[in-house]
Image (cartoon, rainbow, N blue to C red; front, top):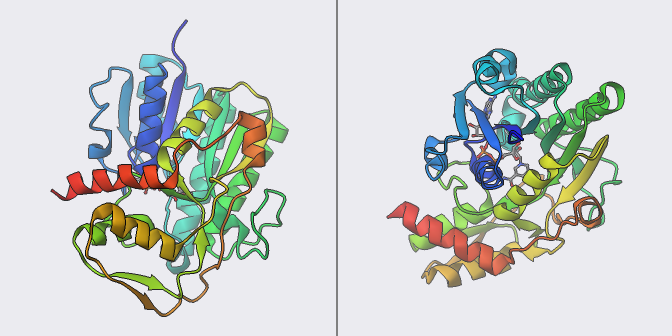
Length: 321
Ligand SMILES: NC(=O)c1ccc[n+]([C@@H]2O[C@H](COP(=O)([O-])OP(=O)(O)OC[C@H]3O[C@@H](n4cnc5c(N)ncnc54)[C@H](O)[C@@H]3O)[C@@H](O)[C@H]2O)c1
């Protein structure tokens, strides 16, 4: 039987490249569609010679038809889509909400529409904890009323609903995952919008001071990219009907102060830790309830924070050399 054929939009990005590796390991044929706005060919260097991988440079906001036509002629229809391509910065979404609308909502509609018209077997979508806004109690469950506080969150939520509509009305199975704070190798340390872990590691390895905004007691749920990639690949290959929705985190809260100290230790750094003013609008606590993912997929994060941070530090160390 022919191997499953999967399109990964945003496959040259941080989470995308790990997902592509996972799918290839499982014997899939994979087409990456990426506009390389933040993604890099270097992220796919370990798999670029795999004959089951095709890399297509295109903007998903323009639709998938024309960019995939040559691929489909050569390899047959796309069966499954993992849609990760996105404008990922909350700050930029506030500055340019209409650009965010196109890069996030329109792009998801394009992926869903392509799946509907081609009879694809599934769309998997990367949503975000940002859809919840500022919640009063943690851990947050999927049943929590979603009141996003940014265009990024709004367009992720609208994208979820677009996929729900395609599943309910047009029978396109969809799996939506709300990622919490994902970290790991290949998270871009030079992006001004990157996560706190990559900023802290990058600075700690250069013995530069780490600045915590606020008192450092704010907590986050940090989940290792390998756990996310494995879960996306598994969900994508499942034949479950209908629409499903689940948080993806670890269910463990880590304060930003604990995180900074652990990173300084792992890096063997002389960095000092200081505090700056709290950032306006920053939420105090973010923590996933992961029961739903456990029930749907038997999900259990495998990589503990200290191990994941160790792997991440090793990668940044080699990237900085
Ligand atoms: N990293 C996290 O902690 C986190 C948390 C919640 C949700 N997410 C979601 O996970 C997904 C992947 O994020 P990431 O952290 O790997 O970011 P990333 O920036 O590394 O990856 C995004 C990829 O999409 C590509 N891309 C962007 N717009 C595109 C377009 N219009 N057409 C084609 N390609 C396009 C980029 O070039 C990049 O390769 C995104 O949807 C993001 O919103 C990430």
